Picture 1 (spheres, one colour):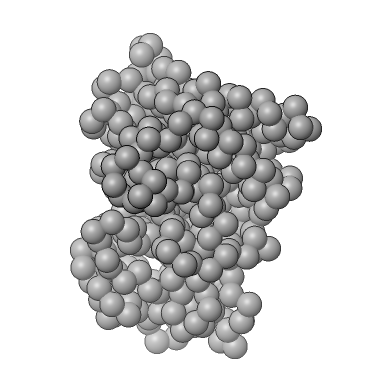
Picture 2 (picture 1 turned 120 degrees about the vertical axis):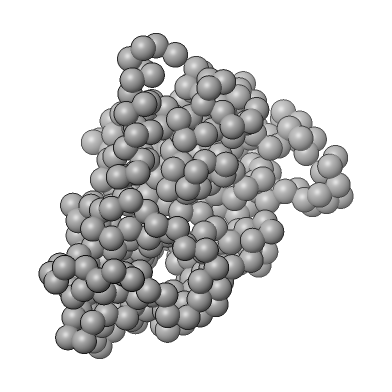
Length: 357
């Protein structure tokens, strides 16, 4: 890694403690069809609260995030703010752009301001721990509790959306704050866009049953589940009218090898995923990343070439060779904070280039 890149990565890692949302970057999407009759009251249907990612808003009293990296943002007045949580969950929150605070296994009325704030306007970002694998928390938002006479305020919503599809690397697993220290979050925050992580630990490109996998265990496949509201079996289909991505970044294939997927099937599955993404996001640029450890490089390039030959010129292969070095890894596969920051340094200007088109 060059001295310049080491300097950039060091600065990015140092900035992680102060990187949460500022008022200028407050974002939002995915609002309920129902509208609150008391806008500003902190209820789930409050139009001043922005819900970014794939949120199930079927129940107007309880909103549930799907996939990794979903978050909510709002502004509020007064000196205190509390969350109403249905059941036990762990979460991260930031007030006024400060460092994220982690709360473990909290429920009911959760006080986010044990030390009251100065009276005035404040900002809030909340990101729940990802409910997946062995963790079964209840990530259900039931509203905010504010001071008497206080209210939420309109939150600026950036127009552009960047969506990231992937596995545990895209989730941010093994980094210090998971989604918040992952490269998708860092890229999105640096660009000031709405950002979503349609990702699951252990995910493959191709959906495999236990019988199909040489490991004897199934694998969640993004080729099939990209259109779902969450990774949970039987999850309803997502309504893509709720937001449209401007750029989609795909990083898939790291896990397929260990399940016995062969090259021809992987390439066919990748072409199918690219076709599905294009169908749902007609105007997006789709960036297909070489997996950081180089698996399926040839097949990924071939899938992109096939789609471009078929006429889709807004599908682009991104060579990530050299982006992730040994010092950026926690193990043989998963980046640490420095690794995610280094990936973000490389990827941010590429995404920005296509956002301007």
